[in-house]
Length: 111
Length: 113
Image 1 (spheres, chains in turn green, blue):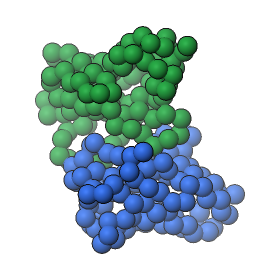
Image 2 (cartoon, one colour; image 1 turned 135 degrees about the horizontal axis):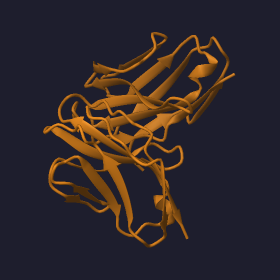
Image 3 (tube, helix red, strand yellow; image 1 turned 180 degrees about the vertical axis):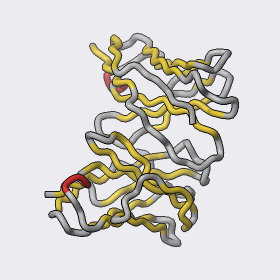
Image 4 (cartoon, chains in turn cyan, red; image 1 turned 120 degrees about the vertical axis):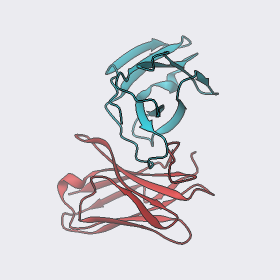
């Protein structure tokens, strides 16, 4: 599985879009990008995943660059409840369900 | 609420003891995963079961074991406990065995004194 690199921390103003970057320059063609978050010692929460195309769901949007070497998770209107550690994980689909969490990005949403 | 339940929420025990953590997956999910989160190691995958059978193993210590029962609930057994086993233990479930879309329970906080 490709290694991912994320900034250790970011701040965002409440109501603004939070853009969380992830670098996965060694990603292979069959690796998906998954995003999870963990709010203060709660169980991690699945957010979104994608392979090549941009994806959107009720929680967030995922923008993957054309060369797939990086991606951005977008929370369109961040709230205080979005303060969490966000994890970007690159995985080959159907190779078992083992999630490997890195250090993630600690997002602080401020009023 | 993810639909995954874990008991107990908190557990305090002494070194050398044995404990059992229990997990009930979401209705319809066949895979159960166990993860450990400690301050120095972060979130680490321990083991996966699918429909009663072991499917994948991470860096799970030999003192730890798990099983998944016919009703699909799972138990993680930790024995000969050491201070370093103090951690949050999460259970997650998914529909199938390749499930990266996993739903996590609230965790069991284990403190070994």
